[in-house]
Length: 614
Image (spheres, one colour):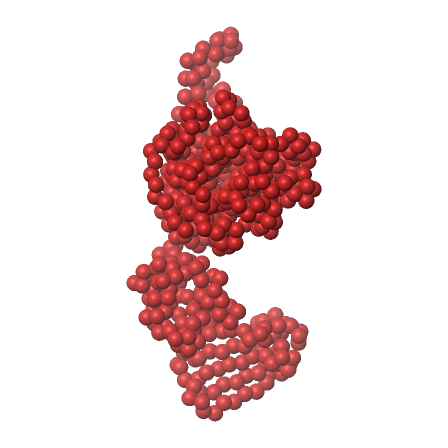
């Protein structure tokens, strides 16, 4: 496995035919993107399988599509199959590859097969003979089972957006498709991220492969300015409207967490006369295609979508990506941001962050190694100024085009008894209501998220695990890249430890260690505040197989107290205590009745015998 550092300055240096160079020129392609520079020569001359790591929008389709057109000749049988996670991407990939074909030579037949489209349409296309199949795993499996598709002569198998296919649960389908292809073929796998599932597929089906990786800085798009706004949940929509208003040529995607959010935002935008369309999993396929065409043609400038619905959307010239809701994981953030800042153009990715979401934003920023700057939501005066400038620009355009003369008679009539200023003001009132006055703006409450404090972390490792303060700090530093100087107040006990770190670093540590367990519990967790009913300073509270065993050392350090239910607590609570040096140890059982009386005195809700210590 190697990574190539080959650098090429133009398409003419990639070994492409004159016909292909002419097609690229007609499409407006000037210079290859980094992923194209490296993959195209390998596919044109090499024999190795390839893994290409690059974000959405970096030109992956051309990277494998151009060599396919160059190397394959029409045979009316499947010679290459390209798998995509969504039907939208399948359609777009097929269209993109077809656009590279020249009118001066016989064309390859490219067929897309995906769920939601009639089988009859696909069957007719397959019977005519297809050289390149582009499809979703589920529908490809259906055709294989129906024996309407054979892959026994496949020379190329390509997995596009492989990480998304794994996330959507297509791994079994992919493996089944692999089994029905010949052993001698080239395998290409393209993915924005490299989770373990991708590496397992590579090891199992690709053998020796060449890795072509676009650096992380390129994956998060250096052409995209990334900003976050601290905002309350109830103020997000007002903030969205202000962003749209402040940008004169806004053309973007607004990402929402749920279908309900998507419908709400779309409806509210249209109520305010913004042109917006919503896209989510409940939208029918034909309607989805109409919405996407309208957005691509810029008849609609705002697309509101969920992550699932937006997968595979490949639209150029998008100026803005708005994370109305913060994505659940880093990979989704990378995919969202990758929709803008393409082909050398600049873009903006704006994320709304509530106080409850800030922790996730810190993790995304650290994992993507991206500097997401804090921004200020545009104020009332800024929005009013932007609206006035746009209005004047629109009027100047009408005046320049002389498209107003048919209204001269009406204008003369309105001016008979009123001054020009009065008439213009009245027309603005009729058409804009209060949209050009300060009173029309809803107040956005300021939100200040305190990120300067520290967090105390509990670590389920101690001296019995061979740790001392130095080794514990080294472990954290190795796993998270957090400087040792930021890890403070390290206390290592026999069975567990505590450290104090700044707020942001604490969230990173919790994220990195989130999948590591010790005795069934997270290896690292936030220590309970001593005033919240949790552990005291230096203490520990834990459960023993659900029976709720509690154990701690007193602050003075002399007496150890522990108690817990026996066999689920049917006989009440057992209390035991003794000194640390192994002296006299006393124990007794508290009856259920006495426990109930004790709970009532402490103000706890009354519980039945079986519920009290569940």
